[in-house]
Image (cartoon, rainbow, N blue to C red):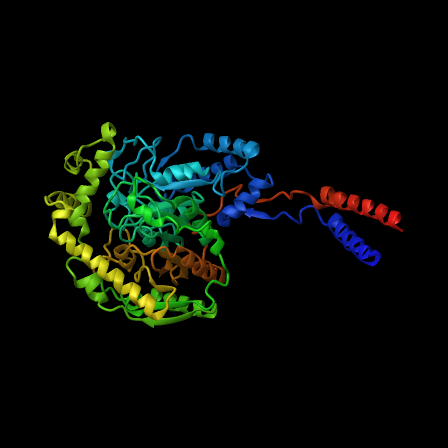
Length: 563
């Protein structure tokens, strides 16, 4: 017994002496805003190196420097005038009550189709420039309840109707990696802003490509959730059978933290009832650096070689996609080509493949306006268009005029029913391939082409490979896959079955940690004050060392007593 006691004292002595001679800054480190994760920020909050108010000001400095002057990225429509006031309040709450969640005091930018009861919600349109909704969107409220700061609202392609992010209210947003190119759309404002590090996190919506396109060409992580995982209540709609909202972030970890907050049942969006019992305690539990090991990933080679509009893959994009496949194999995944039966029919030649807009969009917008009651700025899409303030382009005003001519309700329209049938058949087909091949995910590039020059249309019609997720409602995640020789980001997309977000996060995190392709664009370099040395708490050569030596003294007295 005394021998064991002596051994314990020796161990405690060695530990105490080691701690007592460590330099004071051994537990500290350098904080760099450009690559700081939510975990890094919370560590800095906890050790007193940073406050939420200071963090908010750093982001406001960046917006002022790079979005409001010089070669402006032009990604922000509205800045919350009370952002700093909210940050100070949340700092006080952290000190007195503790943090509500990992997002406590974290600045977030919302796409400007998310309702905010204290800021205008415009869908990028002059027709709604001063419209303030009566209530927050469900996702907006969840972010506020988690302690996030709504820093502002981002530009979007007007009414989410195209992929270049041009609006009558916000103008043209630029891609921060190439200021002469588009940032994707319709959530290009969120994509450009988060890429340029104007906030820690952003929200985006995705009807066809609008989370994943901007993520792909802005070197970001984007998650299009399973339809029903996140509520659409309070988001200006485009096509309710395909609309969903989710996170856009600079890394998989932050996207997982945000998905923890955004996911959940909302009685005002009945489809979210499908998520009950399917949401894990935390998506961050699936951040596994070995998540690719032993997993089976099916490459849809047809979509690697050419996108859904039959645009042949750019050679640089093709090379990076194939390199991503090899990277995943190197991490232990079994990655192989698969065929999707009748793929061309489902997404290209079937006239009802993507016709839901034509038959439903008018009714979804009218239902949203009706839900606002007396606060509605217009009573109908017709009245909104007649304001004369909608972007006068074929893709916005022209298309909305076209869909506004629809008279049959979706339930009465046989063509809409064929559209729904096509969606269900594609969903069954994909799930059958997943089951037969025992797949964890599909893989393909989100965009086979580089982002277009501003003002120049994409060749060959609708770009990208995003419609498999949009049509089926299955979740998809976009991951940075590197840069072309001319410095343009490329993203690859993982598609899983319903509510497989944990698997996608595990796969994505493993790939991200092995490759580390994230970098800040050259157009928005770090500003003064964004890099600093963190404090160390507690300082081991003071408090902890003295505590352990005190324990040692007590132990020695006990030893003498027993001797």
